[in-house]
Image 1 (cartoon, rainbow, N blue to C red):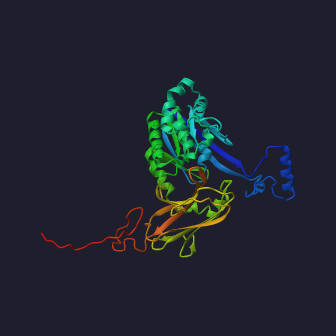
Image 2 (spheres, rainbow, N blue to C red):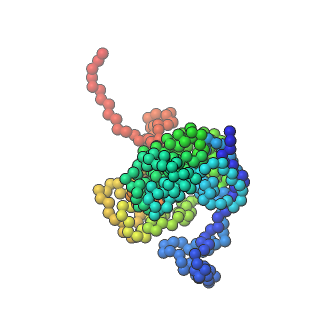
Image 3 (cartoon, one colour):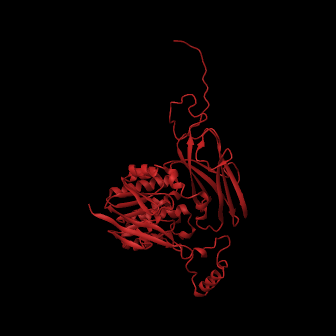
Length: 429
């Protein structure tokens, strides 16, 4: 079997802080302010001053080596900030490595972030042909795939509209259709499929399965372990910029969940919030989780409610803001999604100011297993303001869980005591 991708001693180092402002005059003003201990004169309102970070660096990848054979589907898993997206950007030649070598045999089609590879001023049709040209295809070759691409994406009505007017979901639909149908020998897909709806995600996974059976190589990053299990026979786990394990997908996933609290304990919720990317309208201030007034306990009881407090600041007025939580099992399968406004009959504009949203998970809902809560925020049908703060949750077997039958160790992902009624209605045989 031929090698499609070879990665040798790959490292990537990023310099922290803002390095340049775009003009020499502004750079000098910025340097003079820093020299006098003054704040950055060009920092946006509400944005943290990054000037004190200049000169510091972070190693996003450290001596990563592996090979991918032609026709292989490789899953790449790891926690947020592990270095997965950095690796894919290097393989897609979006950024260069600090050291090491990458050898790729074949054309690469990438879907890394919403909008990557698309020109916002061009229409959907024009972007299809542009991406085909980037892959080295002729116009006739793209013509032969065009109808199939548009049909798969479901954006036929808007194909002649500039893509800057597309919603994030429409963007991803068309981008994935282009990447999958323009016959790249290597398809690289990051977690952007989470933007699409459930039906489209299913179509995408099916298409990637087809691509794999055609002998093309697929690299797939996802937090959805069910999708990884279904598509990938081999996977790699990245932790802290290094390869923790590479091998059979089942073994890699087991290693990933072996001790979920250990990796999470390295970064507190507050530290995670500090590292979030800047958003022009939404600023997450803090997230706290309580049970019986204890903040962030190591173990939660299913006999008591769990309260999550989400504090955030709106920098501008926002229409149809949705703050919500996703309750997932330890393989990141969605069990429950709850929005802050789901009991409201109207969607009012949210004004500038600071807000506190509190959600309560009732008692006797969760079973004694590992869960994950994601705290998220979005502008409805427009974009994500907060991709997610991850909170691991371990539930202890107490309360009404199997109260009558304590020998039963597992009832399912949820442990809701349902109301039953049994009557003696008489009769005899």
